[in-house]
Length: 367
Figure (tube, rainbow, N blue to C red):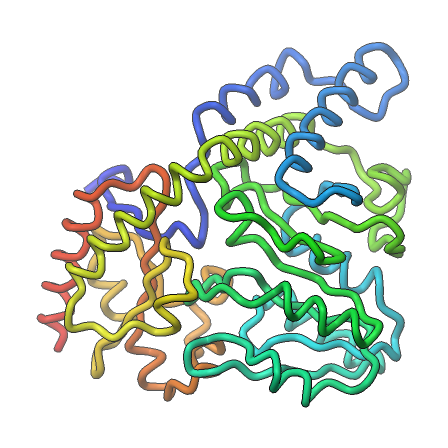
């Protein structure tokens, strides 16, 4: 079986680049190769194309802020947290944040910051009232993701933003899984996004920063990218990101309807499995399910014809149970009996049905 014959059910990990985006990038990989930071005519032409791409990405973000291009959402999150905080800062994060948030917060804790982890309910949602009881009167930053990458739950970011602001803090939203699929939280102070989750190229993301929020750069050198990220930008990656963002904006409603239809098909095909996380407050392109007694890692290993996941792609191969599922109250055994399937714009109903049949058959053989 060739790699192209494998059914792809891992849209939370990455998405196929849209033809429109890859086609738009090609001239900037060869003929239009010039440095966008050069002062001559060719460099200025590239700089103008980068700024157009920036405007395209900004079209899906709130007004009153700026887009800073980065290598991806992980760098954007690091810039947001490290760049806005002092060593003695008070930082709050949810227990189910991506490792980019949790590990960065833990690093700051080692520098003297106080880090508060907010628990979630068994549905995978932050209880805003309970969070209010846990937080001190003043905080510097609250970091919460819009859509969880493992279980797809949609957090009440707007209410949490109010909570952070009431305590004098900033709100950082990891919107990687929501950007381009639903409106981003309009009142957040910083928003981290990634191109390859919305059918753009890998290797580029961005941090949206509200006007008035000051950041200290992590990378020093030539002072490119508004003085916050030294190094030469890739016009090709910026162009691909911009086109993918524009396409996502144009197709947001149609994509959502398509994903919802596939969700209904998947629910029917996976009857008998238990869904992890809220069914209602959830992005419909994410199905995290479990069967007691199943070894999810073994299922993935033995079923080579379907690409799916046991959790975050960033933590795959670690052998550790998902911190997200454990935060929901699942036992280690239950967490290891869980798998995650994701679909999106280019998935079909047949993909879901065939993948479900193969997964159900393989799971039955293991059990």
